[in-house]
Image (cartoon, rainbow over all chains, first blue to last red; front, top):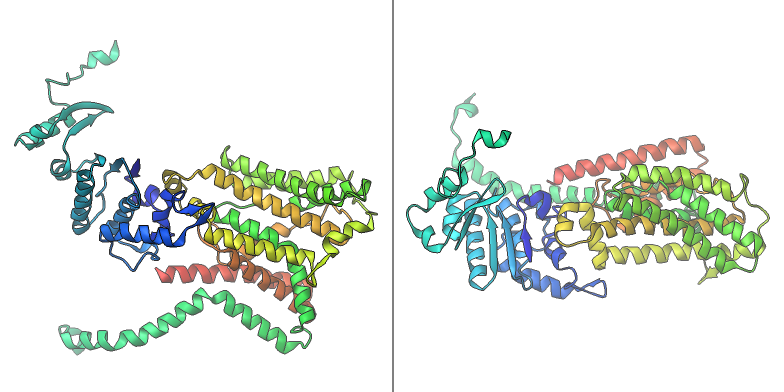
Length: 184
Length: 339
C-alpha cells in the first residue's frame, strides 16, 4: 500500500535529500542487503520510475527541495512505482501543481489504474473527480453522504448531485438537521 | 536620462546573455567551491600559518601529539554528529565519560586482573546512560535538550557517588594497558578513534541505517510515512552516543591511571562545536562524519599551534569561541546564497 500525502513538503518528502534517496526511503528493505545499500539496483529502479513519470530535473542526485512543485509531486508518486503496489492512496495529488505536471500526474494515475492497481483518491477538485474517478463517494462531516457509480458520473447532472451531497442539500439521502435535535 | 527613457532593446540583452554567463559562471563556481570547502581552506591556512611561525609545529611528532589529544574528543564528536543529524543534541556526553570512567576505575581497583571486565563495565555504563537519553527522547517525547541536560547533571552526580565524593586513585598499573597498548606503532586510543571514525562514516554513507538517520533528521513525518520506525532510529543515536562516551571514558581513565569524577567535564561543548564547525545543521538532516572530523582537527590544531606559540589559554578560548560562530555564520550565508 502506498500513500501520497496532501502535505507534500511537510509529510511527503525529505527536502534536503536527493531524488534518489527520497525514492529509496519507502523501499529501503528492498534496496538494501544486510543493511548495505545496493547502489546499482536502487539507482536503476529509481531511474526507471522517474523516467516513466517524465521527471524534469538535473538528475537523481538533485536535491528534491530545488525541484518545482509539480516535479516534487511526481517524485512522491513515482517513488512507489519502483516495486509492486496493490493500493495507492492519493490525498489531493495535484494541490500546488502546475498545469503541465498536473496532466502528467493524471496520465500516471490512469495508467496505474489500468494496470490493475486500486487507486483511492481524496480530492476537492471537481474536474479531477469527474475526469478520473470510476466511483465517487461524497464525504460530509466525516461520513459518506452518498455515492455515484460510473454510469451516474457520466450523466450531465453528476456535478450538481455531488455539490448537493457535499452541501447536505440532497433531501432524499440526508435529512436536514433540526435545531431541536441538538437540544434534547 | 537617455538610457532610462529608451525602451529596452533586444541587442544589449542578447549580448549580455551571450557574453556574461561564462565569465560569471566561473567566478560563481569558484565562490561555490570556496564556500563548500571553506573549512578545508581555513584548515590549510591555519596549518600553513603555524608551520611558518614555528619549526616544531610541522613535525610528525607534533602531529602525533595533536592526534592523541583529539582521540577522546573524536568518539564523542562522531556520536554527537549522529544525534545532531536527527535534529537533537546530547549534552550529557561529558558526564557520561566521567561516570563510565569511574565505574571502570572502581571495578579495576578491586580486581586488578579483570581488565576486560573493567572495559566492559565502562562501555555498559555509557550505553545505559545513552539508552536512558534515547528512551526519554524517542518514546516519552522529552525534548533532547532537557533529557540530556538531566543526564548531564545526574551522571555527574553518579560519578561522585561511585567514588564516594573523591577521585579513585592508586589504580593497578596494568589498567594503563588499555590506553598504553600500541598497535602498528599507534597508541590504542588513536587506533580506536580511526576505526570509530571510519566505521561510522561508512555506516552513515553506505547503509540503510545511515539513510534512516538522515531521513528522520530531515523530515520526521515524511520518514514515518515512508515506513521508517523513527522512534527506534532516535533511540539508537543516543544509545550510540552514550556507548562511544563510555569507550572514551574508559580510555581516558586508563591514560591518567585514576578515576577523577571531573573527567570529561565540558567535553560536550567541544564535541558540539566540532560538529557545528564541520557544517552540520542543528536543525538536523545535514552534516557528515567527515565534516565533524575536520572540525575537530581544526580545533585541536588551533589548540596545539596556539600552545606552541605560547598564546595564553584565555585568549585561546576567545579564539575558539569566535571560530565556532564564524564557521556557522559562513555556513548559513553560503547556504542562503546557494538557493
